Length: 195
Image 1 (cartoon, rainbow, N blue to C red):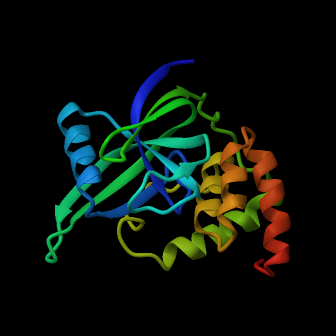
Image 2: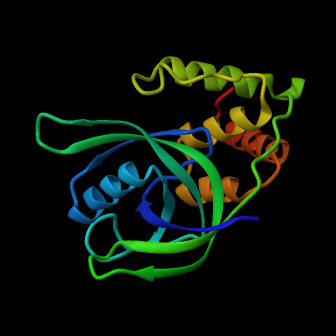
């Protein structure tokens, strides 16, 4: 596996490979990070905050996150920078260093991408729920390429969108098997009475 060094953007969200994440950037450390990423054409890591906050001191995060690339940016009328990031590949943090400006730089091991696998028939209802959720969303989700017949894509998008605890979403990100993820998600859907 490849080991690279990337800046880490700790958030109260979980991003999967193939997922879309709109962000409003206002902190100087992240404005600098975005600028550097765009100049060097490299990505940044999105990790779920375990303890701390998105602003101020560097937060403690989970070790598994998603390498993302900036696919769109614009200046909002309020002066904030808006970007859209797309998840590329999962990673595991090996070591981290907090810089003076509280930006975390991390050496990460890139994890293998999940193989594309057909959606088993027993999980078609999960794909239907996902389709219904996506139809209710605006940009940037409208133009997202949709793969309702792919187990990895369906399980990842459903995890991102369902109203479940962030720790559960993190657990699903750490699973390597999309069928196992769908199996566990189906049980959650029954608990949430969504079917």
